[in-house]
Amino acid sequence: MRSIKVRSHVGADGTLHLNIPLGLSNRDVEVMVIYQPLETESQTKTPQELGWTPGFFENTFGAWEGEPLVREPQGEPQERNWDDLFA
Image (tube, rainbow, N blue to C red):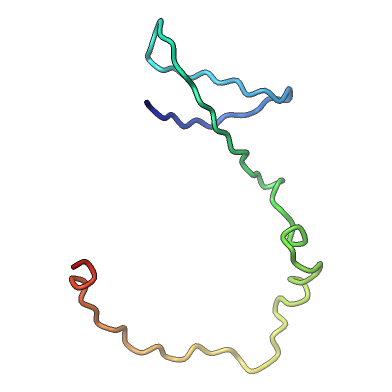
């Protein structure tokens, strides 16, 4: 059994035509097709379609009015013995 992955386009008639050379002749083959529609930029979901309140990002982006956010020093990383992880 072999697996071949191809990317193709469904025509306006809703039919997918596949032309896959297998290197075989005069033989019967069993073919299984699994398809997954691909999202294009025009098909991406809006924030509202993803469950966000309308205007959430427009109203909250850059809205922080407190003191500046500061990341405190994180210290030195812990020394690890990688051999112990794979023993």
